[in-house]
Image (cartoon, rainbow, N blue to C red; front, side, top):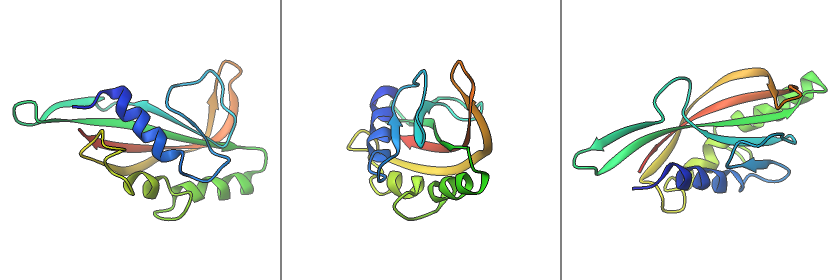
Amino acid sequence: MASVSAIRDGLAARLATIPAPLAVHANVPDNITPPAAVVTPGFEGEPVIRFDSTMARGSDDFLFTVSVYVQYSDDRAAQEELDAYLEGSGARSVKQVIEAEPTLGGVASFAVVREARNYGPQRWGAAEVRYLGVDFGVEVTA
């Protein structure tokens, strides 16, 4: 069975296939430079891990959040940029790049982007810099 760290790294590797300039962080950084994606365990108050999704320690279900942030200096341009990550398909689609290789490089049985939430202004870091962001809920079985 895969570890949380291995799955987080697998998700980050898939996100890194989105064309530049998306900065991908497998670990929570002090500061970000948008556009940026940050992978964290857990999603919206749900369990990080649901153990024993198949009998006898066959597999566990993991939930992750992939947060994507863009610069928020121009409202319309920021929304158009963020919307590209929300598409169901396309070069910037978070859903497409993760589900194109659902084993995440062999660390998982499958991964699926199940939803997106919290679209809007968000703050990051000690200086609480304002960005436009969205959170994707990703379910992984490993």
